Length: 544
Image (cartoon, rainbow, N blue to C red; front, side, top):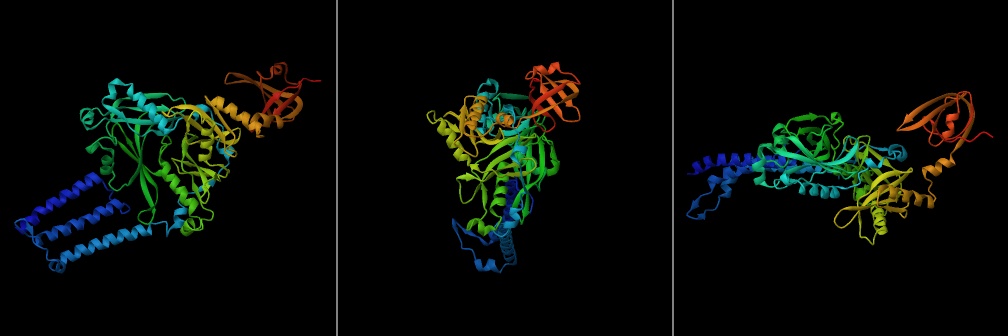
């Protein structure tokens, strides 16, 4: 009878292990903590299997186990020793991976360069600024879904809303998902038929219908569930952040970053490889981190980048200093946002002294595709203070500010944020000067807000570009050696070279109509502003 019980327990243990693997999907990797738990579970089950013959029953009463007899068994000792060794290895590996004893290694995980604000962050067009945050995008997505009668009963909007650059525009994209298990069962053959795309600058919300449905998603089940699909293709990969994106043709993909541990068994996580999974076909392509296609925007999650910078900023003088003395310790502030720069998405967050949260000492930009990080040493108001100032400007309306974007307005670092009502809709916009958060401008449109902000800066002694240009205006007189005409964005320009000089002077006809009277060999006086590749002519004084 005991042998029969022992024999029947073998398939039970195997089935339990198979079910655990199928559900938990642990990566077969020494750096995976879940895999260690899976490995420890095996000798634990074998120990129970070995102990079962020593358990007997009389009626409904269990007889005591003869512990002394079990202790004498070689198999019992071997399994117990194995469990102890595995648990000890796991605990030691965890300890050796800790920043407590590896502070310098953690601090060097991220390379930070110093950046120049006016050079790196150019003044961008307002059609490239994301005016909405994720919560506002979610409201627009739900409204769009509610208007689609043919899909609303079968599908819901997923809560992905990944911010990407698509055709040089900031957009958020999110797939639909099945509205429950029954809806999955009735629609799984054709897959998920569409995704939602929201232009974050214009608020235009579009449902993009697909010719072929998405068969492989995180909302599917069994073999088509994305996590299971990836695990069986890449059994040793530890997947970290999985995000939804579209390529330049609008094809939906899952961007699946893999964890890479650089310190001990479980410490110092960055990103190793990146697997791109076609959501329509399930086809996967594995890329090294430096070979990821440029259309991909989100390889490193914002949370991972921020944690890496916090290690960099707080562990400069060791772990104990980060807890006790906290000398030179810097940390990120309690929020972040995104900026689109050169077709990449960068995470923005402020940096403050860990001993004081009243002001920022600077801010960082971190590239979500390459992990490139730049620090800008600009002192000013912390984001929370800027948000409070903006909210105070409209306190009678009860609007709430979103976490700011950092913009370059007239070479001044400026917080830009939307002001939302109680229902989450954007009603106004606000700009707050980073250096002086008492300079606050609001407006019903972005342009109105900007004009008010420039006026306030001028009133507070901060020169705008126009005022700076007047102050730096220069004058030159010479003979025209060459003159050429061109049209830029519908405006006529004359380009002039003066004798014995290779400097190009750019004259707009609309602002200086008298230029049409001049020819090669004529003497001319120009008032101009110096530029990088040419000088912009402000006026042409008449000859006395």
